Length: 71
Image (tube, rainbow, N blue to C red; front, side, top):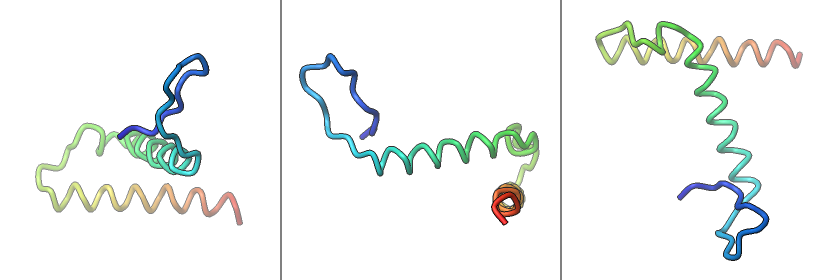
């Protein structure tokens, strides 16, 4: 079930959690950053093991970049 806030003029408003929305936003932004790596976006690797290894390397690089800026 999507967790997107309803418009203000809607009569029936579905359940909405700000915490869940914030976490979902972080995950979507992570995948957006991950797709900036051309090798992942175009899936150069044929084997699933190699593709997973590249995703892990890109994830570590993104994490290190974020960790480096906060230190």
